[in-house]
Length: 248
Image (tube, rainbow, N blue to C red; front, side):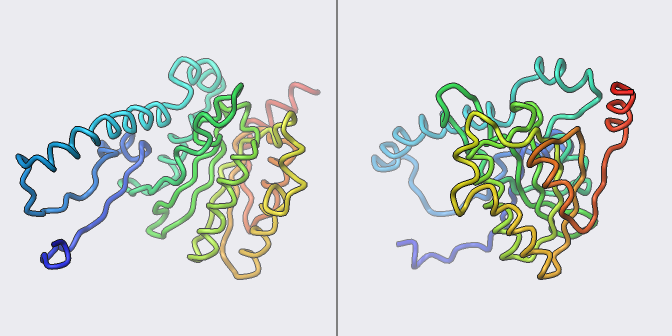
């Protein structure tokens, strides 16, 4: 019986691809329970045979999600514009060696028939900045230029809710074209959709929770609204300069 065993104290460590790419950590570095299990027993073999294919499929799908749109598209759509992909942005934001507990990575998985909204088009998670735990919310500019799908809004709201409940400062890495217009009728009418983003922003501000936005692209629509509602707003001016040169 598990209840009668003396279990060791476990130190849980969660790492996402952000930690892997920058710090050489393994994403699947979860703790091991040192339990007296007979790996040669028929029940163990039965459960192992049933579970192993599921775990293999899970890891394969997870690796595909963490890869994002792939290096070819990254090279054409981001590197030519001197941009980083979303998880590399998060990596550079966090303290060196920081763990990053990434949330809702399977959001949007096979959700829409005609659109591949990887991780819901947004990366959210908790990591260390200047030694403090911070909630990071970062648009993925390779998913329809960072457009907000219904699943993007839901994932965004969940991250804000966690930050509010745990009094975590928030850093928003904004690079968004705003609402995905073919689905805009699903984004705003409902009580717990688009407008609630700003409800949580106001709620956290009223409770004194620091919120910082870093605008990394020419964000429009809801992306622009998100950029300008915080305690501190930072805009990467190189993109603004290029845009002004283009229209002048």
